[in-house]
Length: 218
Image (cartoon, rainbow, N blue to C red; front, side, top):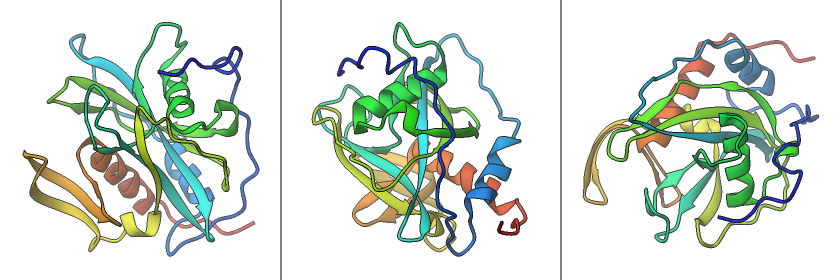
């Protein structure tokens, strides 16, 4: 892990002015409406490892994208998998949100003050490793000087939300991946396989967005 600069972990995210961003179905206002008022489901369990991730949304080429990373083979768990920036709680983290923002900075060089957090999604559990993941959704600027941590992050890439909202691209599948049987939401995107907890979190986000009536532009 890279040591976070003094004062960075305690900086409070400020509201960022993002361009209005459209794709076939989604605007930034629609995301705020879906997430900000959502009453998330919390999973309890003292035997679970607390962790948190950031679900970063950005405007690229006129439409909303999700930032994802591919883990290296040197990390302790979930080697080579597609995931959100995030990780387990460390001593000194003031909250789960602080964990998500710290890990995002360590893995991608995204500064906490450059994230506009809009809400949380349901907790998710990775049964094979015993992690409980709390996802925080936030808007981030783009373009941005992202930098992959070479020990943890093999790749940083962006998936259009319209791809994830397309039921012909992102749907329930059964497949053996890396020697593991998997049944759940899955998306193949430009050589990356999005599945597991990441797939479940993204499916939850898509379901919430599908349930919100489009808001008029301002």
